[in-house]
Image 1 (tube, rainbow, N blue to C red):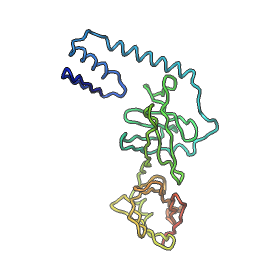
Image 2 (cartoon, helix red, strand yellow):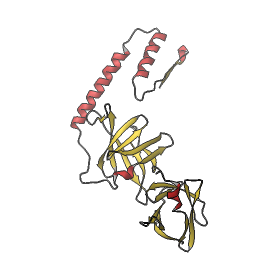
Image 3 (cartoon, one colour):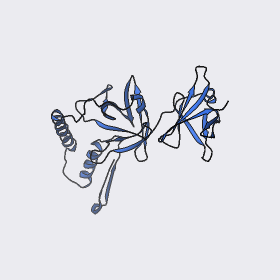
Image 4 (spheres, rainbow, N blue to C red):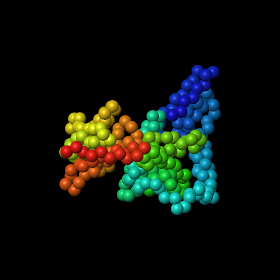
Length: 266
């Protein structure tokens, strides 16, 4: 979007386009301004193209001489599946990180990025151009830095969306698994936890809840096989132990300050 005003001439111009980072709004604004102000004709389209072409050429030359700051032999701290999830920022909205054919991608609005591991928990986000191949030659990658909570789980990511400001933080919520009512029912019951009783129960047909004495009830979100996260509190999980016969014998409360085992009452 482009908005401009000429207060002395009582002129205001607003140009809207459903494109991000496009030169078009500025070009249209300039053409309209020249007509309304009776200025001589200027080929703003050609001038803009020349500026863009020069800028792209400069970037290509710079990329040829750039050296990588990658630290060799610095693997990621987690398997790539642990980075999947929905990442949220109140100002920038949501984007999804997911695996396709053993490869990690980020879907940010209408754009798709291939996440190439750089070092540690930092990935290069290469924009996937048509016909579906990422451009790793004529562009600079968007950096995604993933962060852990005290339990060691991936909690958030910081993304360098704007080159002149610090990275933008996005909180992660795990992708919910589809779990049937029959599957959830086996987790219900009372569990002995340090001399008190923690209770798991269903509300409706497919939502599992946890109630610990002296605390509010917590809605549980399935994030892995037999593992749930607390919907309202980050970094807290429950991992159920299930026998080969499908019977639940205990649950492990996984918290930032440690793991706590609770045995299921028979």
